[in-house]
Image (cartoon, rainbow, N blue to C red; front, top):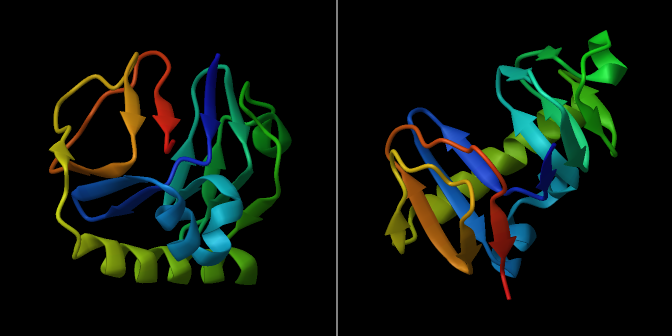
Length: 141
């Protein structure tokens, strides 16, 4: 089972930043309550536990979660699909992304399998895709 906890992954276009630090938590605003949040679609295909809320905006599609469509995925927080709460979280994510995108990244993880890694405090960049097969540990120390 994959367990996701407060993953601060901000996605816009084809570039993603992963912020592992208390600073990331402060900047993300209302989106900080989500374990997973997307702009268009959240799709789960396996036995997943998300510690936190699950949201999507401006899109509305969420699949593969017990509370949504009987799928195998679980989450412990609130579900927000294309409503005012999700819209505000999306606005906060975009504002956070704009502030954080100006930071110099420490490591480019493009194309790597993140399973088994422990990422300490820093700014990580993905210029395209990365894979996750296994446990990714975020340790802001």
